[in-house]
Length: 475
Image (cartoon, rainbow, N blue to C red; front, side):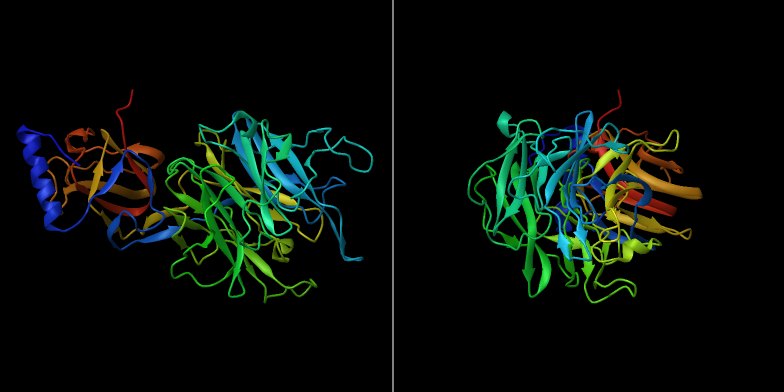
């Protein structure tokens, strides 16, 4: 990066760049994008606090799979927002424990205007027991785990505005649709053949890296694991490879539910269903219990997976039964049921599998609220790595108690406080907001520091810090 600055600002830039070079730290080019504290990417020092995982809040049952062509083993749900409409796709099938047989599998469709209340339109496409008055959207190959998405590729063809992957025989086939309802196979042979595929295998357009990215199930050393590959045209894919989960323990990840986070698409977030096959509920004949976990990545290949559960089975006995707690693929914004509260993230998790008609329960989370830098009442301090930003103001997503607080200091790359932006200059911030502009005695305009390396020092008491970004001036 070349800076062309003169006068006092030029002198400041030279001082800051010299400090960064002296410390041997390559500044993180933050630009104006939103960054979440879901790992230590931004963190140089953290004392007195911790990165804390925040489980979502269970809400209402979004949908019950109770149609004759659905039933107690309906699963592999996909949810995404499409303009004013929310779309849902899932496998419909039922298991008869007495005869140990399953009904034929079909792909079903539901829709919603708010992501909360769902209906099953009668599509008139495929017959069930002589009638097309049903919500079956696909009944060809791949109904076991048909997983669609709306293609965000700006160069995508109109007839393939919606795409899907689904397993048939020993591979994944590619599908297309112009409207999300009428589907056809794109090629009469599988496009991906390396893997197990006996799970919800999914793909989507990666807008940051301008490619399609795919995640599917494989078995590694006898453990259910995740493989990934990429494509520029959705038909020709790279050789699948295992994702790297760092030092996370080897555990069965039954599904992956990986997606690009819609507010910060440079981040991939995943919500695998973790399966523990050796545990068996006393009152159920099939072994295995499950919960939902959380994982993040910046490139789709290297991941940080939290060992603690993101969604526990909880007090409902049926969620302790084999193959429950499967998080649907997709995150959507929904209205809060509390007046005056900002929109929330909704995600969906299954219950009732094998026991009765399956259900999908909605869970909610504050925007960016997966993980926070958490400070106790006694206080914590966070110092970021050197950053280079664009923008005119610093915006944070935070929450405090009535006695808690957040203060922010801007430093040069060597850690020296910058005049007008020291801790003593920082306004004491308290409250709860998705986007709060930080103020100092020098004001809130930080544009004169844009383009040069700085550090941020946060001093927090009884507070949670979820995300930050440098934003343009408010209109």
